[in-house]
Image (cartoon, rainbow, N blue to C red; front, side, top):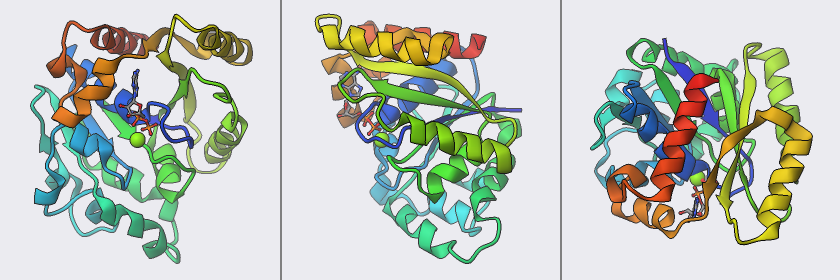
Length: 252
Ligand code: ADP
Ligand code: MG
């Protein structure tokens, strides 16, 4: 039965998609059957893992509105052991379509229940908002991993995120927990990165992952080739740190 990890932070550009793609790939590389679910209408994880979205007949949206079974949405990738449920811009319509639908926060959980047996890990890449899509992802998940960009204001907005997690835990998903805070785009040359790390550790103690993802040009280049860092540049520091993160995730 898969462990479901939701990668969430309502801020954009903090490394959610990069973390989703590369954590999912690293988990597959250590032998875990892994499914990456792209829950963002921008579909960056879909493109970044090498799926041509223009050629897609169906995507997560069609599963959520009940048009198709989850298994029909699962695509294989160039990484052995890694599958993906892709997204496309249609996903924007989900929110409006579900407005009058009872249990609208639980449709993703029902969809993923159909494929849970086939995987060890499911990694969900969330959109940069606390929208109905994110609530669905949180309602499906066992744990939430929060990427935190090592920049000024990094912790701003986290209270809102944590309140949302508490609300979901109290109402829809009692098993939900925050599995960890991940420092991304960490730059050892700047004091600011260390200050953000220190502040995060002050607030969240050992919830902060020991692994920090360094700022790396290679990590930012890989998606334009439709490749995770492990294919694009397997010996890079980016690949090494996402592998270390995967091991930490498995241990937690
Ligand atoms: P989000 O999904 O939270 O919006 P992304 O993962 O798309 O964030 O990252 C935002 C931008 O930063 C992208 O252009 C991405 O390539 C780049 N980026 C992400 N992580 C790193 C990193 N560790 N080093 C350098 N660039 C990064
Ligand atoms: Mg993203």
